[in-house]
Image (cartoon, rainbow, N blue to C red; front, side, top):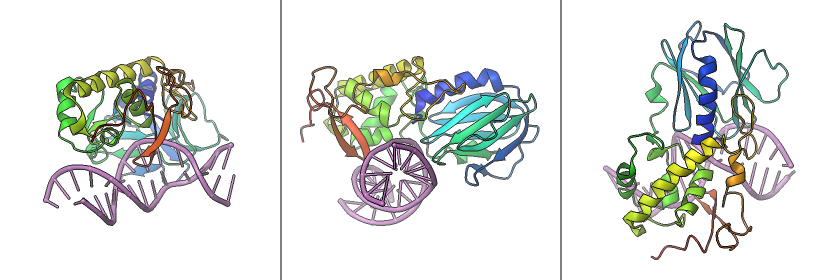
Length: 268
DNA sequence: GGGATTGTTTAAAC
DNA sequence: CGTTTAAACAATCC
């Protein structure tokens, strides 16, 4: 499940390999994968590759290609066509002969072709690793809200890039119960949460992301952060800090993992 | 074949 | 009415 660190690893690997490439064609293999607002990518050149939250942006000399991997998307660059590959949903052909493959077993991922990236990113807030998102700015965003802390962090409109795995891990590291409401948090706790999010995202990027099932880097490699998870996917296993069994509940209908001892239920 | 999986959007409730 | 919560949806794998 690609979140910010996985997407970051992919663009770092991809950028030097595709920047300057000229697109010859984009070929969809599933009718919903490529969303075309009606402009041609033919002979457009890739100027740079960036990221906002979980969205990958290929800036062209005229227009943008925006890719969202959703749950199972993979973006892998190959020297020739992987013709009979399973779950291949689209290909971007370059005049060098290289082909960027988009695999997506569950077909939730999307490739948007647009002149105006804002219409795709309309519900996306400041990126979690944006240098402008310092401790004060983070606290400002969070403290204005009233809901449960995990829900707020899942909402990309507040802060973009965090998903289920890294939210569970960050809340554990900050010793905050996922159902805690913002007004129940002390200033120092939100500050701690900010620091843990930053720390964990950076460690995860260094570890090349988390491979639970489908995620691969642009070169087809696996992530390594799954070996450093403390709560996600560890229901009923002992807490790495105190030994208590990790609990699993549902928050916003998402599997949510936490240590009942280290992350005590908030006082009402 | 039922259940689990998650990011985003839309609908409903407060 | 703004905010928050719930549900729907995308589709596949085991």
